[in-house]
Image (cartoon, rainbow, N blue to C red; front, side):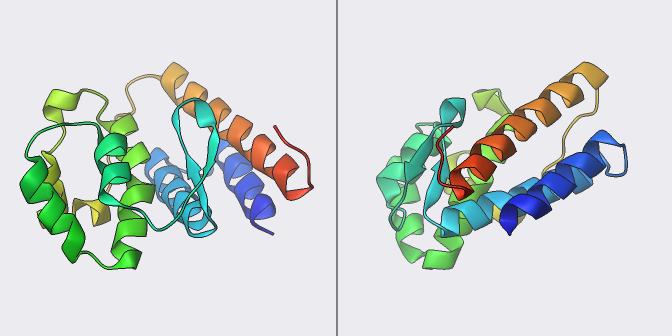
Length: 152
């Protein structure tokens, strides 16, 4: 059950058995699993059913509105798996690089398949780390409840 592995990941993170990098890799994997299962995590952790991702969904989720025409052509060349990987990666990338001006332009992001790059989380404050873990724990609780047939 995915909920069990998610809970194990969080417990290991809380106990200090995982580095932030290991935690980010596991969260990225879980996001891909959710996306492939037809679940997309949005702002405020709402759950939205997904169909194969279209360019418009990518454009709105990535949220750096430059170079649309070239980005759209590159998006069309991606396989469905690459599109799923990309859509799962973006929320983590945006969290790691919250300031839009420092994010790659969409064209560069797609051309270089940056959705396979390592996400580097700055470990500047324990408080921020604790907040991320708490948010992840809330997501797990929400999805564990969803697995049992209850919502949020």
